[in-house]
Amino acid sequence: MTNRIGLLDLEKHFAFYGAYHSNHINIIIHTLLVWPNVFATLLFLYTTPQILDLSQLGFFQSLTFDVVLRLDIGFILTVIYAVFYVCLDKKSGVLAALLCFTCWIGSSFLAARLGHSLTLMVGVASQLLCWIGQFLGHGVFEKRAPALLDNLVQALLMGPFFVLLEVLQSGFGYEPYPGFKARVDSKIDSEINQWREKKQKKIT
Image (spheres, rainbow, N blue to C red):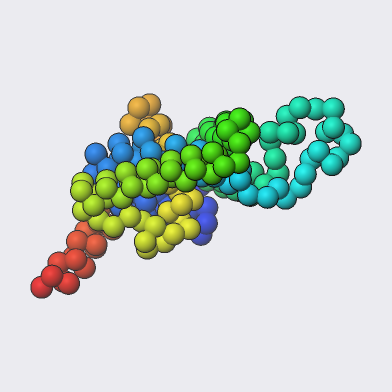
């Protein structure tokens, strides 16, 4: 096991997010909606201005993909997420990075086909559906406010990776390193107990 601190402390990130997602139904809802939300977000961001117009570069003039794949905010976020996930855990991080770029490429081609106005509407509507579904998961089943209300950046960064690791753990028994699940489960139980104690104190 490699001890990491700060931004690369995977146990800390996973325990933080896991403490807000302990209900099985809520976990299923997030498993079904988080990555589609990533896709919808990138679809929406395709409507933002390009950072660099590749068509202005002579090297790309003879290629067709530059008309679709653009250097915009969506691409920058995709790179940031991909690099962050690989730094957290090389094996599952590479898979997460591939999923990020798959979402970026897929959303880019869909957006190019739909056109600006329809892309904007579909992107916003899809995000609303995904977010509403996740909020209902917390309100109805988890009985706890979403993690993003306590730490927006950490929640948004870890959401997709948490879902992927949950699937890899439950479906294939994967751990970033031996003992990871046991250590994280212990931290999650501790954080949930602390939250319940605080909640009980407020009630009394």
